[in-house]
Image (spheres, protein in one colour):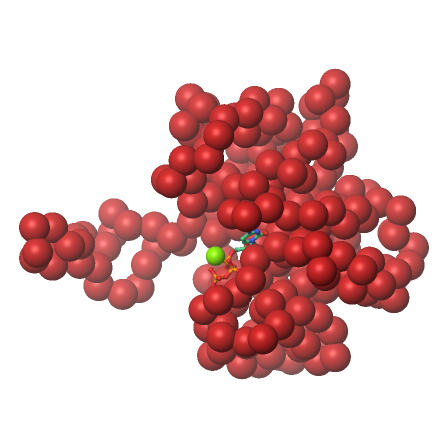
Length: 228
Ligand code: CTP
Ligand code: MG
């Protein structure tokens, strides 16, 4: 089966409070988006990569791809993203063939610390079970707002969902024929809504989503100590 990775880079990064969207912030002289593209290529090549981004940033990514990934360049497509994450994914899915089953990874470029081992586990699992969704337990105590009261919740029953979320293309393409619903916060929720069963696997605590300025410092430390 052919492999595809949709690496989402069309957000505006409001919580980062920076003028340029967070996926373009520089970490060791390379843009943040570079790191997940690199790990996907190093681990899963041959793989087709589709990068939805903001229209004003398409040339910048195109240039970066040429500069950093010259040999694999023909397999990387830069496309325009959409208003919400859901729409960015939906646009990217128009580039996945409908006539042959493939494996599709959908990843937040903001998760630049993604490790090869997790990619491999997800790939094997999705081939076997149609989907592979990485989750991790939470470390904070959890409260739920209910009738103006913060009620206790057993944190052993709560999980954070990461990316990449991996699917066989037939169920993914079928599921995304729907229109947007507010509860579609990730791809797994769209596929589940379409009636398919999800298969969950252990994620990785280092696979954080760069969201706030402090996360950039964590990512720098991590890259310096593990990858550079
Ligand atoms: N994303 C996207 N298209 C959108 C919104 C988000 O491709 N319309 C991407 C982001 O670029 C990011 C990933 O989805 O890599 C996860 O989203 P999030 O971390 O929420 O990023 P932003 O929406 O950019 O940040 P914020 O919510 O703080 O504005
Ligand atoms: Mg967002």
